[in-house]
Image 1 (cartoon, rainbow, N blue to C red):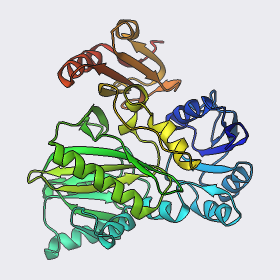
Image 2: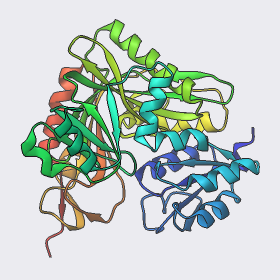
Image 3: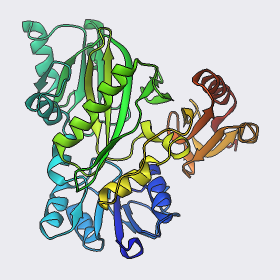
Image 4: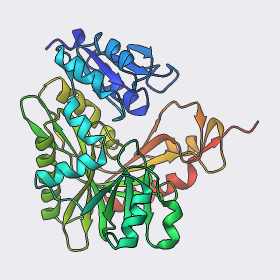
Length: 384
């Protein structure tokens, strides 16, 4: 393959598109991106930026006709246009049929059930009112988790209902209702697949969430789990990507229960926040691996070069406006601290503005330094 003559289109111009375009640039792959404004993170680093709406059929269709391979950095795109492009010979990864399943959490859960992939028990409801009626009839019981079937991301579209006092938190949308699983750890495994059917899994990571924003704030690789559980998690992720048949990446988020069962929480068919550490700590980054997968190139080694901890840089509470990174110089001077800023001009509370990967010889040392970075590096707004 002559990568310099391959045009790869990305639906979405956020930080995932930026890091993907940077990886593709190493091989002189021509990258095109579609999103509302070229001021978004991908704009300055891709070969061509097209301003448009990735939810609009005509915008996506016209964009897709200009590239050889089309991929995504966000699930919530116009799949009807992708289906038409695929029918006309454009390579679309992930496949539109799989993307339609994945972007609807109800269909996603039914897919796991159909294919014998372990997931928590669930029921589907058309509205918040229907959930309240089911509570009154005893069809469901507290505690439970409600997830909007579509358009949820980064903790949005999720409500944890532990008792009647939490009912004001109920979402009005068509939803999945799951039992509130008592878990030991939250894990993620990123896997890749190409058109030849080759699959590779990155080592499992352990996630810690910001309790307010419900975003992944801190992750550790390798996860602190038994070797048998690590192997089982990787195999489950490989089984999942093969079942969906997608090419490129699939991020598989897992619950490890108190009795050592692994349950699929949800998946994302694209580069994912839980794989950012691979840029600095693995032989192949998740972004290069996604490129390999969608171009049907041999997949790269997923071995770790070193232990790593990743910290999301989130906008500080009560800070809105032009961004400033307090503590940057002090942190960038630390050995093993790799700072990645996404290029967003404006900060908002809990907005993802960047991430930091901390490399060290062991997990304890990496965690200690990562916590120091969390204390010192703050995303604030410039005082006016």
